[in-house]
Length: 119
Image 1 (cartoon, rainbow, N blue to C red):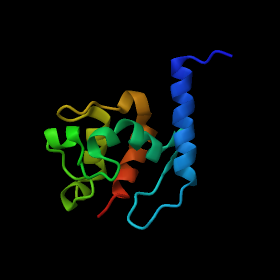
Image 2: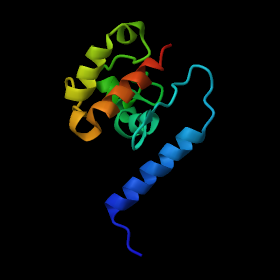
Image 3: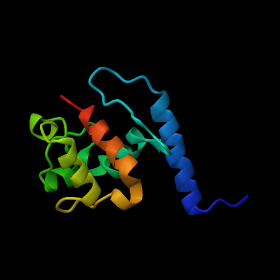
């Protein structure tokens, strides 16, 4: 049976989502919030972690180059849900917007995921 590259990518994303969903998270680790077709943890890992880092610190080569703020910081956590939603949906600076690919529920789930990153 032939599986296209896109099909393989979707299967990998589903496997990652299942793996993340079945993990027991330590204290201080962001919680995973369910969305309709996966979870926010898997979405964060797929779309955000390469720049923002797995822990939200921004300590990645790309994150350091762009001087990203630590998502766990009081400055980011003090932003309103509307502000975080706007940034995730529309993008900011070199960060692309994810409104079209994630939809409103996916963006809302990522906002909740970022809220779970409180330091």
